[in-house]
Image 1 (tube, rainbow, N blue to C red):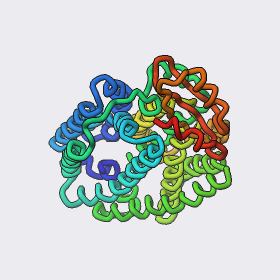
Image 2: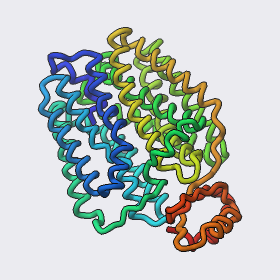
Image 3: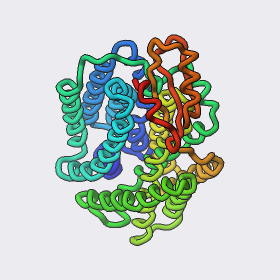
Image 4: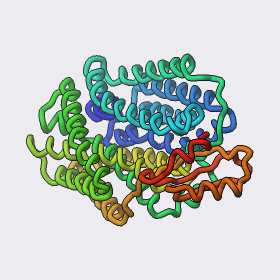
Length: 421
């Protein structure tokens, strides 16, 4: 909610500057990136509930600090404290604890959809709340939302569950070094880093461009964001559906990166009443497609049993990108102005395009977790590895679970049904 309005309201703080503006936007991402994997690992030791409730309490505390801040430095402290509640990986692990293998994909997808919906709602609600009650009201509202989150969690999420050491849900430190050397995963992690760098950097200037260059008042920003995000979402859907249906995901992916870079570079070269909205619409359409495509591609590309670690590195890269985008955007605006900021971001996106072209097209693979139980491990491995559609299998000595990578087009799911966890 603070993303679309902070640049407009920063002037109410005496120490406001472009660099501090960028750091305020990005501070949340830095602490999220640092703690995402450690808190997930901690939840394996002490349980999910204390980590999730503790993370939400930290988020509430950071919201209150930001709401009461009288300077940009105070805002930065509040935003950093908000980010310490880095519970996304722990929540995903709890989903794995609570769901069966057959329903887990749907559960994860519903969470992803709720994240996308919350982003769109935040871009609309943020300007409305700020125009009516000021910037601090946004942070008081986020504190209230954190409290509601705790109440929902305590009252409605089952308490008597067993924590499973599921490598598909949580990071395994021993796998990190191997995955950091995997070329496809490295390119995808750089992609999410660059994507959120671009988003955070351009929001250092987008609110003021809309307000000052296009003459839109702060009370009108909400419907502009609704039009841009809604229009971008509508434009994204056909490209994504066709890419999946025709097995042209790489083509649609690279086209979206190129469109993102083009829109950013054009905004750095020329802006007008007609051109600026068109380029912003193109930017958000490409952003929506890439935001949805990257985790799907990562899931298909990571080795069997490594999804939790791969997603942990992916989330860390995403939040580091948000921090770097805020810091770089604020610095670029201070040093080179609005045009220079867009050009700097555009060059980074061109580097991403160069790396994306070298990606191998994703195959329709999915990881499934099976229960080994008291079966003979060697016999189990032989049966599973010879099942039609099984591409890869990972079994860890002393662990009751097996992780298999399957080709969704040809796998015989009926033969695997007896082994579902």
